Length: 141
Image (cartoon, rainbow, N blue to C red; front, side, top):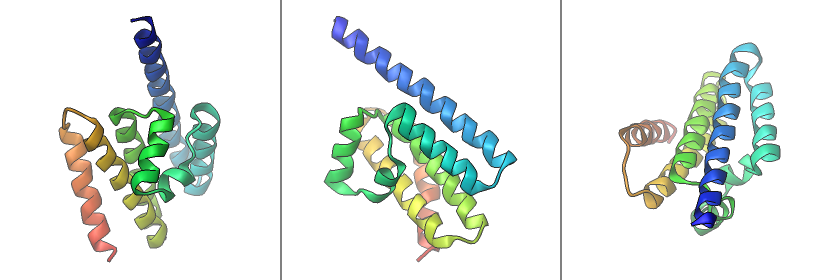
């Protein structure tokens, strides 16, 4: 029981830190250029949560599942990271960096797929985001 409480505390801490970092991104993208905001957020994710965004955007299949497992990311964490990647992809698209946008959209979709696999519930916002990602990915073909 005590071990479960410790694990739940760690998950909650991770969630709070992730929320803070992503909120910071939303503020930074208004104040700075997108690249600078992304660099700050990626560094924060790496130093505070040990999440390597390059790994998350590059890995697929079993490797991605294993990486997510080592970080102990929950479906909720994956939802938040997927939303962040969608936002970054949208910003890249606005800056006419379509290849980068597609990379971020595809990575976000892979994270959502893993969230669907992990979760016993299916939130509507996850379904909606996945549909938006699929539309963006089809446009990019």
